[in-house]
Image 1 (cartoon, rainbow over the protein chains, first blue to last red):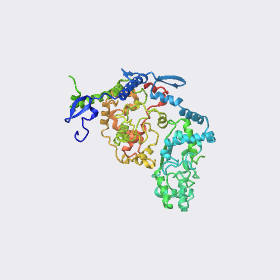
Image 2 (cartoon, helix red, strand yellow):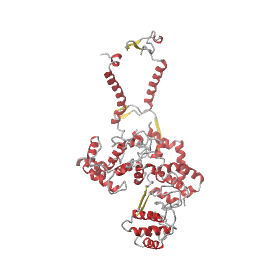
Image 3 (cartoon, rainbow over the protein chains, first blue to last red):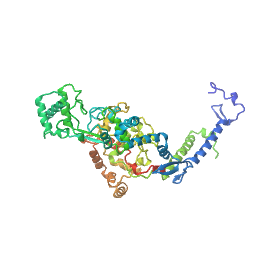
Image 4 (cartoon, each protein chain N blue to C red):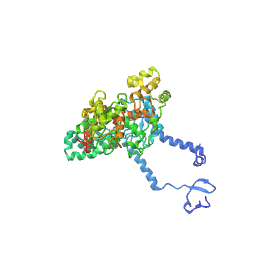
Length: 311
Length: 246
């Protein structure tokens, strides 16, 4: 080292005492005093910590700790409460008096005081709904219904179209969010054999406007309308579906659980419906009534209503 | 004996020991007081140890390294509260060994994910996350749905946890203490001798993976995820209550 690097006898070291320890024959460590700026910096941190200990929670003492002189004041049920400085108290105070929290609360209060129809009829309120609702929808709803509300074929209903299982008026949407939904159609694997399911499929397709074998349709209709299938109990005799049961309208060409409209030919369409009748349907939307406030549910309901399918 | 600079620097073993002592002091003064400060763990109703099925789900959560991307601690800030719900309490992870707080959030915090999505969504999402969240970068865990849950050793797992302080009961006395503390329904789930039956019963009743014919790792995983952060009813406490514990 000493041969290729700097000489240990470099001029900078002249007259300065060393630590007295020599490495590798002649490598020594100079014992300079600490630089002034560094030393003062060090003293400053010592003073800083003394002040910090005085102001904030710091030292453990037996089964508690020194709480510090600094305090936070917030309100609980209209009464003022003051406590030692801590991040939980700061949060409560921020939620009560912080600028953005107050603004948000003010707007949420306006929504809370309005009926759903009043929100829908007011551009100012809608502007808030659309900005606040976007974040909420992204967090609570988009996991299933997707960011734009288009849902997923076969699993999660499309909220952006004009076809509703449980009802598309804003009150019903709010109810759906609050209480959740359990969509249920029994499976018919034990009740109807393959041929019967095929006939029912032909009949259901005829309801939606597809052409098919008249004989099959007639036999399927008997099953659908009679006691054998009993489909009419939920889907109604005309096939438009009972909203109270979440039974879809079968008289249009909008399909939620199976991609009938995208199927190649009549046989493929019938196979899809037959399979669904065989398997049954069980779909659950969780309830958000415990998780979200009334105002937040109103925000979401009106936000969803505006996707384009609101009734 | 006077110890000189040179003595320490030329004696590697001594240097290591002295370094360890200095570093330990730094750690000890921060950690040890938490064990005897009364307010470290909040007094709160509802927190209970995991049921056998949830505990197995938690083991799988740890096995698959979920903590590498997901934290389980909602911090006391407004934005976190708006997104995830009430900030996490120390009490809520008092039966966690090891706790899953974490600080790495490649994915969202999961401390309050329980009840937020349906079981069916969780199954779909764990098998193939992109099928429900197109922009997700989370890998799929399809084997959870394929593999039968191994729970032959559930009693031993619970005994091990009991050793480190989780109140699973092994005799009548401990069981009665649990009845008093958690109520009868919960106490039954915490009795080690009945662990296997309890696990099977909960899996059957919950049918978390949608396949009632067998108990898979998915059943355990979803059971665990669906209870995360749901034990404390925060509406029971006023805004200032938990502040007093810090």
